[in-house]
Length: 165
Image 1: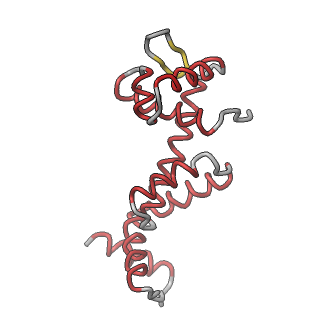
Image 2: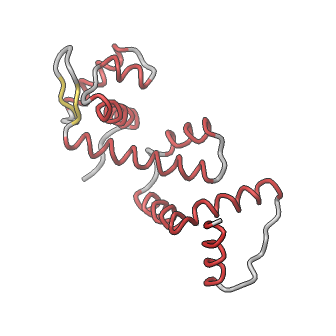
């Protein structure tokens, strides 16, 4: 299946998903507020999303995602969170990390996204994420790489023991 949604449409679907997860449904004013746009702009986009079968809505009533809309929103949200976690891990300041995550979530290829998911899962294994982040922070501030002088097994045991402290 070819993804025929625009970046803006994905942003709307993601906003509707976030709102419906807390309220059970989304109203036009909620979506407009979440995206920082005018309600009239939101109404036009909701019409387009409804025509594409991505949402169901009632005139002056609630808006909910269809199964297809939910799937697209969830994938977009997952990419966003993954990128935000990655940028946070490499010490990109919060506001910049959020902005860059929003920009990139729409443009990752399937292969790159899958590899990034694997990389983050690898780093998260047995607490290595936190250790890696700490070591990267030390390197970022000092500019010095500390060479590893023992086998992979010893290295991972050392990392795991540091995580226990």
